[in-house]
Length: 415
Image 1 (cartoon, rainbow, N blue to C red):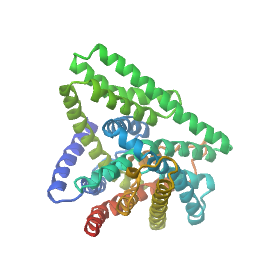
Image 2 (image 1 turned 90 degrees about the vertical axis):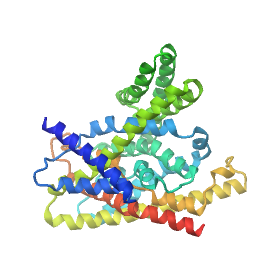
Image 3 (image 1 turned 90 degrees about the horizontal axis):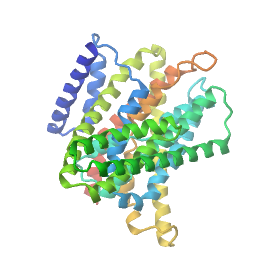
Image 4 (image 1 turned 135 degrees about the vertical axis):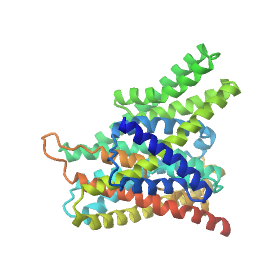
């Protein structure tokens, strides 16, 4: 009963603070994170630890499904070059960049552990970016790129994470095997998503006159699809994204307006609650990981996290502007069928670069690090990796999150 009381208390706090944030014109994710840290520091407050598997199942499928369902497929296809360069290429570049920096910066860290830290922090959280920039008048194609990136980059980061953790446990890393497995994971997720989309479409035709059944099936299917894909050892992220894209096209063509409106109302409330809980939970984790670190290591680890945050930002900035140049060259010399609509301008490039905040996926996979190795020994530097990961998440959300609205407004003035 105590746990239920805490959840209700957090939900009430989250709803109230979101309303206050709108009144005082502050991004609600920032307000909720600060509130989470403050609540976690209350002495009488019991520690609320996250179960990574539950986080991945409860939060990831509905957020991915909703984003895929609402994204414009035409816009997604137009910007597929930029989205893939950020969601796949940049994820692995960031993993490697953080690994190199961590190896030469953090005493005692090995290459496998450095790559593990890099993989944890390689994926961005578009939920935070969209939440913070809401109402700032971002162009539709900028929003599409940010959301499209988040639909795929979690899959890339999770694959990199699995290989890095396997290397820590002593398994040999072979590039061609890793590349093949990555392709198979994505392809398998694609197949599962397509099959589940077809199955759901076929089922909905039988119950198209029963609104409750139709909406209930659409709510349940993202979770079922994610679980099925993970049980088949393929990407649950990609499977849910493909399901969302399939249902989006089916909904616009086949569903009556009243069903579409009812479904939209449900998902709007559900995503609002999930997003709010995510930011509160991120804040709540900092006091917990703080207790697991020696007091003499707190300041050095915060310093490492700050330097890694800067490195991640500049890696992203360089990659986005390189993509801008590549698109311009491709359009100018008519290579790769680049359309004019796919080109990036200076303003869009800056906003996309500044929106590279880390969030709940980084937090979940950090906390999900194994406690022990296969031989029973403790996982090396586990507390340090988790602390630095949480600190980087907070640095990106609070630092970039607080400054992003100002950056957008300044760019609007100079436009």
